[in-house]
Length: 206
Image (cartoon, rainbow, N blue to C red; front, side, top):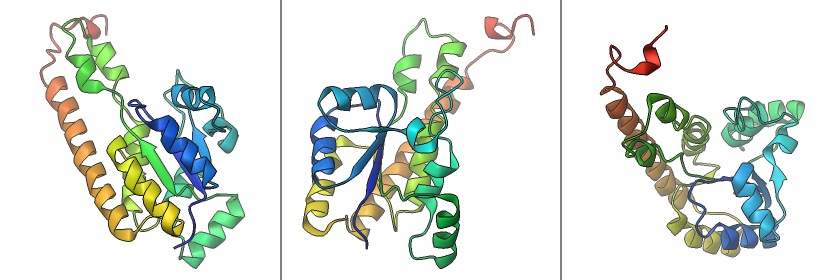
């Protein structure tokens, strides 16, 4: 397994991120990030490359499109030991993304507010986050995916020891991803199914 080169970090729960990211940079890992996460790390003196700089494509549509780009998902999904994947990545300038640390928009916290509207709920349905997580978890053979700050210490310990995490650790972390995205989608579906389309003002003037 090759040494970790690059990490993408984009978080709602930013607890512990400064120490985690700082140690990654000290280990020679390039940090990619977006928005508030990038700012928090920079404010702590950590070098960060904006995803928009990495892809050459700006964040747009009020932040709805930030990480949905082939240079990001290609870097996550390509199989490092697949010669055809290696060839295609070289042709298109796709660089590996070896660590993905992401957690999701706080949908359940948003809809717990009794004043939450359907429009509010919709804007707190995370798209890029689950996509990054599922891509990373699918390719756990090559990518370390983190959804829980409690896992930072183990990931750092293994990288310090060998330059990367173990396959068993990456698998366990991938399982946590699918548990999270499953419960996240279930929470969204359960809330939305309670919306009365006949009386909700969102549907007026259709």
